[in-house]
Image 1: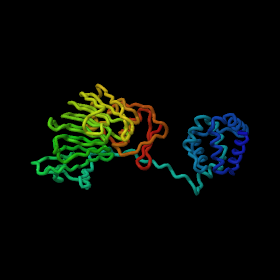
Image 2 (image 1 turned 90 degrees about the vertical axis):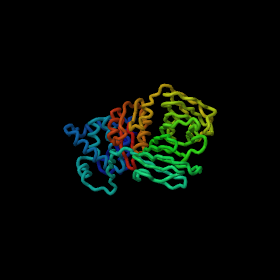
Image 3 (image 1 turned 135 degrees about the vertical axis):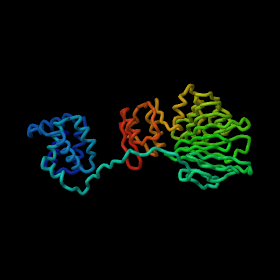
Image 4 (image 1 turned 135 degrees about the horizontal axis):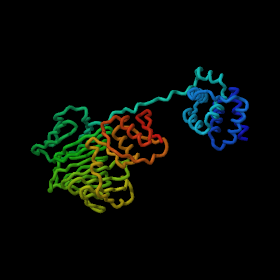
Length: 407
């Protein structure tokens, strides 16, 4: 029955009476490995009647095949051509050419079709890297785009001069004239990073797609800030005023004076807090900035991992402490470096999404690949992808800054 159907559709293609739908059915049957015997019968029958086209060059074969596939509206020519030839070789290619006949091929290559498929648009991969930039949202809701401002004094808040200089916003406190506490929020969109010097002298680096909410003055007996995304802190020591970092209700960090990195992106599976120097206490979902409940105290080169997702209704998992982590790898971003040593492909792609402001999708399943090495964050996207392609993964850019990962 299958052989009869193949012969019927084949005859229609030879006589140029096949519809686009019938051509699609025929090509689908040719690609089905279950039809192998019927296809061989068809090939044998045609080769008994026609002389095989053995002397045609590869380039001519490809041109003919491309013309034949384009004759069928809405057929994915490149995919079908490649998979078919890999299985059947030149004999099968000869049968395809016989489907339309040499005269039909000439007509197909010259005629104008009303519903001709548009050419595949190639979008450039040479996107520039991220740069310094952030949006400052003041307590009254007004916003300042910091990368559009010149260096210098941009205002005063609670007696502190707010100064912008070379990618850093600094609060320079004068004599305190007000105890009214207001809150600002610095946020970095994708493709931007920035640093901030808080009124107490604490310095914060914000990675791309991150935010920091902070008071314009630390008036009480403690210092509190809130973050999302990723940030690196160098906390000014003040034993009288402990420093607390809240991470969206997922975790809290208590600090006396230290350096540490927090990675708390919503699309990552865990909140990772890495201590570089000093000592900190990390609490999981305590419901308050004060440490309590599930709590660990870290030593330098230790990482605390909390895997409970934001908004989860379950109790937090026990905090996992990892010893002797590579702190240089974890903080490389603030020094302008991608450190991909031992990093899975999907994590690398999430970093690229944030830095190059792109959307990454996977054509099939996510390849099980780990990368190694370090690269500058100042590379254009195409330069970086060429390096990654050495690990047997390929990429295609589509409209809307959409990067497709190919198997």
